[in-house]
Length: 119
Image (cartoon, rainbow, N blue to C red; front, side, top):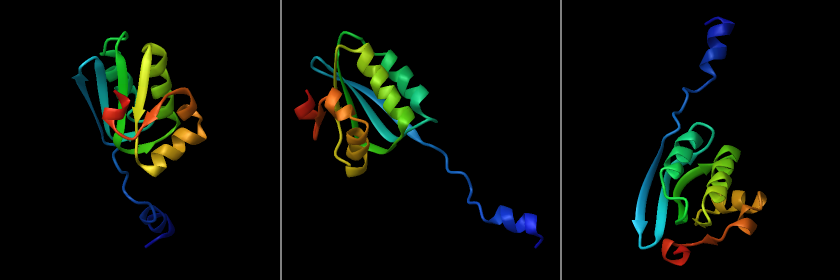
């Protein structure tokens, strides 16, 4: 095996960023559920999902099934907060909560452990 072939063998195959966004309405609350990664590859789709909701509604962003959150995802959440008059976040994963804390988004938007608490 030559050096170039050996070098290419060191890299793993790219992993596709998989995310699914579902919208539900519970009473006067619109819930956007994030399943998978909310990152650079998926933030535009999240933006489109949020933009499809009524801006005068209470928006709950459910990150319970979110597996990864980067700065692009944080930007998308902040944009959603500008679009809606009331936004809540649901998150329980320690890694996701840490990102919300480091970026101080948890001081700007209420973070709840369950959807019932957020509503």
